[in-house]
Image 1 (cartoon, rainbow, N blue to C red):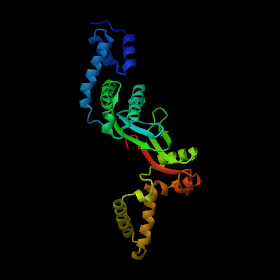
Image 2 (tube, rainbow, N blue to C red):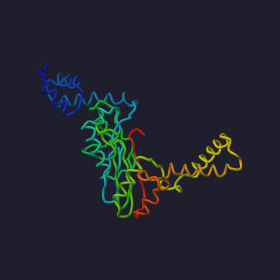
Image 3 (tube, rainbow, N blue to C red):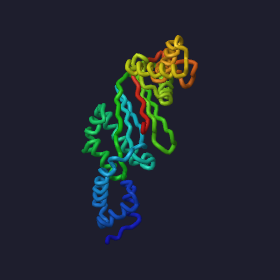
Image 4 (cartoon, one colour):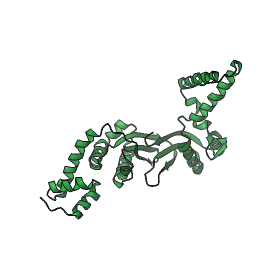
Length: 275
């Protein structure tokens, strides 16, 4: 049996981020050969990836990077907050993000096939999942084109990487207000830019629901049209950014905030880990 010291185990753990017992066993099996131990740990981890396929990934990070003409944002998910805050996981997120920004990938499938460091993003993620011992998946990626961008990344826990990310593409010169709108989106979670973007089928479904609710509340039949329209207006305020009251001042709408700042939002996206 090879004489494996605590210093050897510590050095390999710092290199790979693997557990104490697995690291020691790999070094013993490799008779102290670091490169062989790395190979043993990766092979063992790769076999474990299949077993982890059905596990849930409710932790992770949101990351974004801007270029002159587009901003790319990703959600990289893992199983535990322990891995989510690890240096290796955060580094993996940054590596994947930059590769996708450079390639222009706009879908998860295209992203996983993107070349990076002599392999692909998908293979790199699988490799790191094997090393870290958790299921890791690239859950979402988006690339937003535009003239200018406001990017807001929010930490819900100071010990974790950002858990909420917002990208706003806009025209205009008031960067401070644009960032304020990005912060608003992180809180208010709109789905669409304007009421015109809401699918008519969704509006009709909501109209049917609020009409039934209003009838169930015993509202007078003659008053139903006005009541229903009022509730549909409230629905638009919930799902459409331009209809919402500004989080920093609920006396004004986002539409007015943008108009006063001479800004036009052309697109936006919001990611939240696990949502």
